Image (cartoon, rainbow, N blue to C red):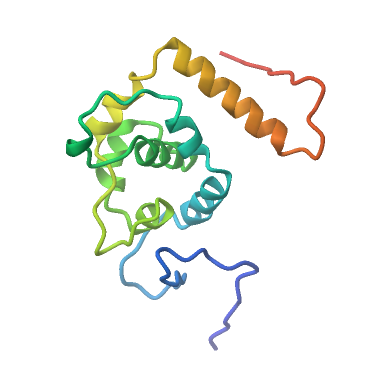
Length: 157
């Protein structure tokens, strides 16, 4: 007996192509939840917001991956438990991660590689890090109907 269960949500389309979750083989990912995380990141615009705060000294004619694309791939990898940048060498072709980053699994270019990620992890200077911290606090405060009067950060080492 086959029992079909409908999802209580719809998956976001990528470039006007419908995304469907199925469990019958084909191109597989073990990180299906990353598609939902990607949709949340896209709606909040976190990667794009942070990318605007980091200077990009690269020659624009030679850029393959934008700073926002690099940040998005790294953030989603960390959120899925892949804390090492070298995990991106495997994840860069993963269909779930490509969809979460707005790319089609088969016809679009792969995500950035570990060397690209590693170069950018140390690119922001102290001022950029401070600006990014304030941007994240602003994003947090914007999630409330009325911004909180104060925010307490409990930072453990």
